[in-house]
Each structure stands twice: as C-alpha cells, then as structure tokens.
Image 1 (cartoon, rainbow over the protein chains, first blue to last red):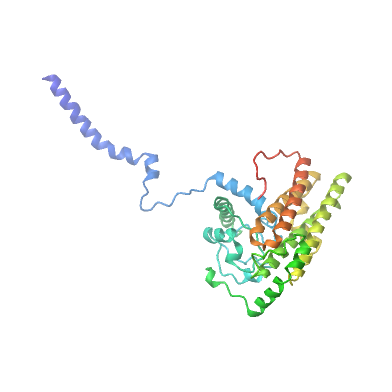
Image 2: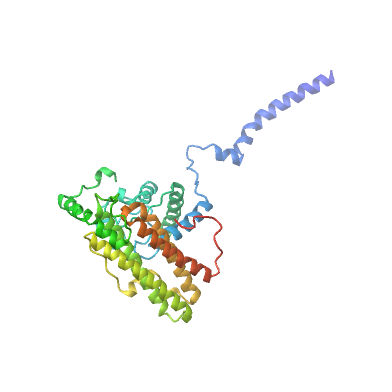
Length: 156
Length: 193
C-alpha cells in the first residue's frame, strides 16, 4: 500500500513540477530564444567576420588597381559608397553615364554593377567585371561594413 | 535603374560606330592581334571600348607616375631604381598602344594629370623606406593585372589578346616585387583574375 502511495505521489510530483517548470525552462534557453523570433526581434546579422576579411582581400586585389577607400584615383574613393547616390563624390570627375545614373548603391545595385557595369550604365569607363557571385557578395559586405562605420563616425 | 532606361545611341553615334568598325584592320595593326577578320563582339558600340581603354590609359599613367615618384624619392637602392625604371618603360609601352587604339577607334585619349595628383591619390607621403615603396608597387601591379583580366569580358574581341598581354606584364612585375619582399609563393592555382 505504501509502495503504491509512493508511486502515485511521484507521478503527481512529476506532473506538477513538469508542468510548472517546462515552459520557463524552454523560454530561458538561449539557443531556443535565437531560433524563435518574437514580434520585436530583428533579422540576425548573418555577415561573418570571415566574409568581411575575404571581402577586404578581394577588394585590395581586384579593385585596388583603380580604387582606394579614402582617395580618388582612376576611380572614385569607396568609403561610404554603400547607401550613397551613384556619381556623387563631389571632387571626382565621373563619366557622363555615371553623372546621369539615378541610383543608390545597395547590395542589389552593387551586385548588378559589379557583374556588368555597362549593363547598368552604358558609357561607363569601368569595364572591370567581378564574375563570381560569391566574390561580389564578399566585396559588397566589406564595403557595407565600411559605410556602417563611416556613418557611425559621422564621416559618410 | 532598369535596362529599359538606358538611352538608345543617336543616329550620329551609330554612323560613327559604323565608321569605326570599318577600321578593324587598322586596329589589329595597332594591337598586333592579327585577328582583323573576326568581327568585334562590341561592333555595335565601339564607343564603349573607347571609354574602357581610356580608363586603362589612366591606370597606366598612374603606374608611370608611381615609378617616377619612387625613382626620385631617395628611398630606393640604385639597383632597385633600375628595375623600377624598366617596369616604368613597360607601362609607357602599354600607354602608347592604348592611346593608338583609342585614336584608331575615333576617340580622344585621356591625358596625364599633374604628378602631385597621383602622389596624393597614392598617399606617397606615408612612404618611409624601400619596403614601403615596394609594397605599394606590388599592390598596384597586382591590382593592374586583375584589372586587365577583369575588363576583358567588357572589351571587344579585338582587344582581348592585348589586354591579356598587359595583364601578363603586370603579373610579371608583381612576381618580381613579391619575390624581392620575400612574399611566399601562392599555393593555389589561378593566382590572378
């Protein structure tokens, strides 16, 4: 009889504590919290440090023949380019095609531009194409990270 | 901007383009491509070639200026100056070929900027010793090799070979400079492009 009573009490206790604490235990799990967005959550930042480092290396090697971050050369300087209007660096002499281009540089427009500049602005003097989508993604992420920094520092 | 928004070329531009296309054999003589019989992938718009070739001329002017600044900086050993002047001669050769090509296409080649503008653009004031100069030269040569390889798809077919030749020259310069700096040999293939 005592044995049966003990089992019944254990079942009751398990039921009670399980019900009472199962919910809070799930909500407090950091892993689950990341998986389950709430109404006011933001989209996680999926740009990894590795992607930015790859983007920087690609930028130096592929874009560095004509561009620098802070100085105009054959092409205009690039710091702050993400989110900037095309052809808008004040002290750079753009081609007519870029002067007339009504475009804001975003991930989507930069991707199209780097894939084939003349398809975006016929008459541009930039003939360089970055053919691989993953390389464009890395370079754009790098440029965006610089623009974010410039914006935070009020240098955009 | 959608492709639909791209303005159509004027009749005058088209007529000019036709005239320029007819000079393909002269162009082949300039570039030494020997492919005059092959129609250009950009035959309908050689003005795009002019714009791109002019950017390449600007790139070469910067390279010429960089070696000039380096040679007169007092930071380099005489033997290094000699190598730099030789590389500068290659860039002058590129410039001359590109200028002739633009003129043959009926365009106007871009002109050289004052030396101080190149010096500012390259931030040469930050150079302190020979290694700094060599690292700058290496970055420029690597960038130039990649620039030529990256613009080949945008150029008319008559210029593919000469752009490849120029990329080869820049890669040769980069290899010499990297060796002088003790840079490791890249393990993976397809070092450029």
